[in-house]
Every structure is written in structure tokens, then in C-alpha cells.
Length: 267
Image 1 (cartoon, rainbow, N blue to C red):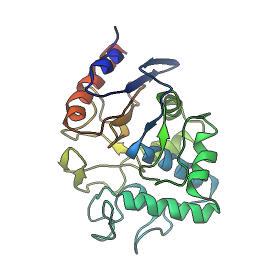
Image 2 (cartoon, one colour):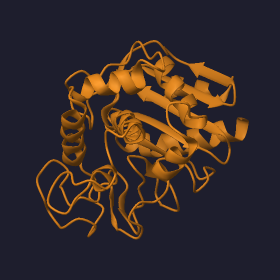
Image 3 (cartoon, rainbow, N blue to C red):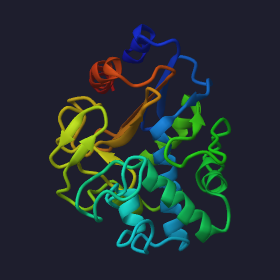
């Protein structure tokens, strides 16, 4: 048995996982099964925004969202918008994890591109990576996508060796934006600072955290309230993802870090 097989003991009805390292992909569980991604959706939405920046459809520093906010602020959860409400503070005052911000981003990009946001994500990311089971449609850019482990493994491989955007663009997106902002990492409490990239949550030195203790400080990714996660450790050259059908809770906060450490140790 390998470390991925541990998902069979998770307290969930269904779980699937994959680890990607170089050209090697190892899978466990029903990898073709389609799950709700919840906030892992933000990775797909952010990547589509990066494609739009490279195409010239967006500029990171153009106004978007509330007064004083830009595309960069929306992607980095620094616009001042609340989780699912309007403005709480001025931009760059605090890192407020915001579904509203990503929905503002989706509306803004749709206007710039002249097409619905879900269609843009499909054309910019899903179709080029042949992620045939993945769908966003007209659902929320923050949490509305559905996908399979088979598909997300293709996206994880893209993050390890980008083809749809330049390496420099992905490096920027996984570098701290607006350093020093404090905030709350959902499910794990206050973080000082609560560093974030352009849509990518950065591990840095956060504690507690949903990735493993063996993950480098350069690790980035996202987890979702549907019991889903995807992280990439560029130092190790490893990506790990898991999808389940049980909402995030203490079971995940306890299980995922040890699972991540075991996978890294075996890779």
C-alpha cells in the first residue's frame, strides 16, 4: 500500500486523490467521479485571469471592484470586500477572504472579454488542458466549479510546468501580494501575516495550516468547503490533490496535514 491509499480510511463516503511528480502520476479512489470543488474553484478562476492578463484583456492594476481597488486587490483578497458582503475596510488594510471579490472579478473579466466568465474559463483553461469533466457554467467564480481528480491532475501538472502562461507570470501569482496584511485563514484562525498571491493561498510560515509540516514555505494552492484541496510544493516538484463529498471540518484539518507529509515522504 502507498500513502494515497490512506484515503480509504477517511470518514467520507467517497474520496479520490492524486500525486503528481515530474511525469509520474499516482491515483487512488474513483478518479473519474465528479465532485463539487467549492473554493478550489478559485484556482481555475485565477488562472483564467492570468491568461487574460497575458492576452491583454486585463491589467492587474486596472480599477476593479470597490473604489481604490484593482484586479490585483480582488485576486489577493485585499480589496476590502467582505466574505459574502460589500466593503468592510479600505483596500490594503486587511486580508479579508472574499467570495464577493472573486465574483466582482468574474463580472469584470466578463465585461472585458465580452463573454460570460464561465465560458472564458472554459476556453482559457479547461479546454486547452482537456479537462472534459470540469464545468463552471454560470455558477460562482468563487466556488461553483465541479471536476474530477483525473481533470485536476492535468491542472496540477500545468502548475508544475506551465504552458498556458509564462513561468514568470505564475511566479508572480505565487508571490506575496501586499505583504504584511493580517487576516483569518478560514478554518484555521488568525494569521499574522495572512499571505496570499494572485488567487493562490501561500503556505509561508502559517500555523496551523491545512498542508503538511514537511511542505516548504513556497507551497501554494487552495482548499474548499466541500472537503477538497490542491497544493503544489515547487521546491519538492510535487503536487497533491484530494476531492471528497464530505464538507470541510475538524476531520479534514486533522487528516490532511499528516496525509500530505506521508505523501511527500514517499515521493
